[in-house]
Image 1 (cartoon, rainbow, N blue to C red):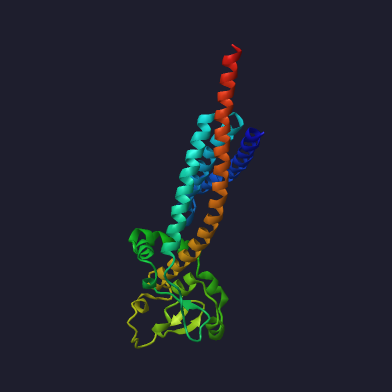
Image 2 (tube, one colour):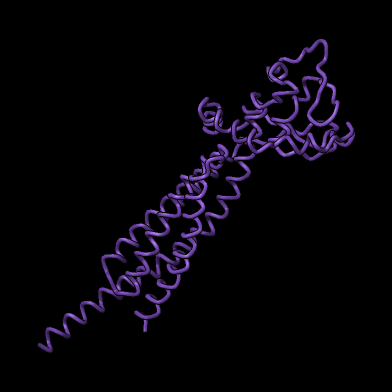
Length: 272
């Protein structure tokens, strides 16, 4: 009974994982083959294929090992699961460490916050300030038309000032408040004749190119990454608990496989 329970449970769980890996792998292949794919999609397809292929191979090893009583396949499965547990644990700790620092600054009379790159962890700053990385991120932001929503709204100045802008909208789609620019509408601003602000973003901003080259835009991206990583870290904790439970059941199945194989070997030897 313990053999059947643990092996059947591992078989069912891995069959579900196998089914889930197919659409993930298919989505990665589809994105990679799209001729008109954006930079975001091209950046994502490799990760999807890697995750899908890993889940496919591991779930097949667990499924065959549990249902067909192939001990060495179960051993490979448990090894892969152990590596996954270690990686998830390390990533979760790392995510909480690098996202522990930094927050948006409230602006008097505004519904949105403003973001400064220096407020966040040095690791995130270096990743975003890297020229190659930022060229990809900027291309991704431009392809996704993140500022188009503000352009289409055409709000009054009172409505805009009360808007709850996302970190990327606040950092990339408008000039910093310290520049003193006058709001016209959408993403159009009028520069002041004399600007006493020392913020270099005031010179970088333009109504045509917006603030995609600004430090505030990089800070908005980092703030978004921080928020998303915190959410992912919470999900990883839940998933980690689930994986540990599955790993424990897999260990029982592996032990039962060895006992069953030893019993059958001993029974055949005695019968002969």
